[in-house]
Image (cartoon, rainbow, N blue to C red; front, side, top):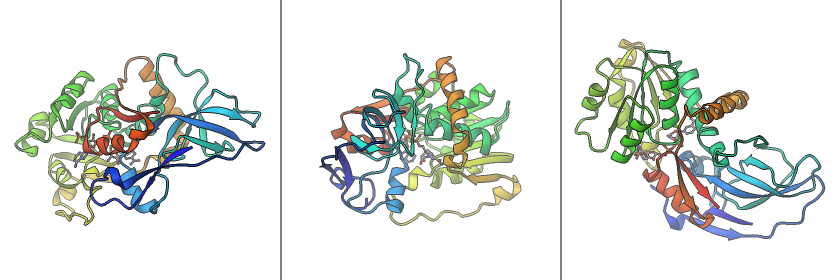
Length: 326
Ligand code: NDP
């Protein structure tokens, strides 16, 4: 089995030399165990802040993957079936079946199983929860989402359209903006090239914003908060603009607009709704099958290129979900 480990804690943006490829022999299977091999692995922004909170140098990088059963000494588990497992950046592993969930046996033939790491997996559920549970977005309201062309943001915007909202998205390249228009965003802009974020937000929605799905944090949030409508809701999903900071940025703290506009801001972690994941995933898969929810994947080929895929995603190379294909 091959695994990528973290050599040292990252300082600033992760660099290739922060990762090491290690190989080890796996023992033979005992009764009740299964051997799986990875097919698709996920690289996600949370790995950057969580590496600091959860890992020590030498640990295998954290993360989820779609894996195929290659050997089974567990009667209930059939060779050739697929699981989503949270076992880190590793090509082969032995499991007794706990802590994994099986992909449905009738997974649609025309859809890649990697969707269970993206539009139909954790990022899709995060979009669903943040928009519908935390922001409680209603028909006719205006929704703002940043990182809009990414795994979570692209789904947020499309669910908002399904629910009858107006959607504004920002992303970091013109190609991403074109993509956002293609998948139905009402307005989209490149936050890196606009001369004023405030003007761009005002132009995109002169009527302000009722819901703000926050993925970026920092200075972006300071500007966007000012554009909120009375009783606006802000779902704080991420703060990627600050994940690489060694010294936390300090901002203007709590702004008077929170009070005057009676805003509600809530940070959330998708796993608080883990019991609802199966129902949400069913709904997301149905929307994808019906063509109501478009997906895009940014695929990096080869397990050996996993650090490059991770670094590239943090830099913004991806449209849609960043995936590693073994
Ligand atoms: P994405 O697919 O959106 O990929 C990350 C994107 O972040 C990049 O493509 C880049 O897009 C953008 N980015 C990178 N650096 C910056 C920066 N300094 N300022 C602004 N944008 C930047 O990732 P995900 O969809 O998986 O995640 C999006 C957010 O959601 C992250 O903040 C993540 O932590 C959060 N999240 C939270 C969860 C929860 O339970 N709360 C669960 C899953 C994700 P661009 O070119 O547009 O800059």
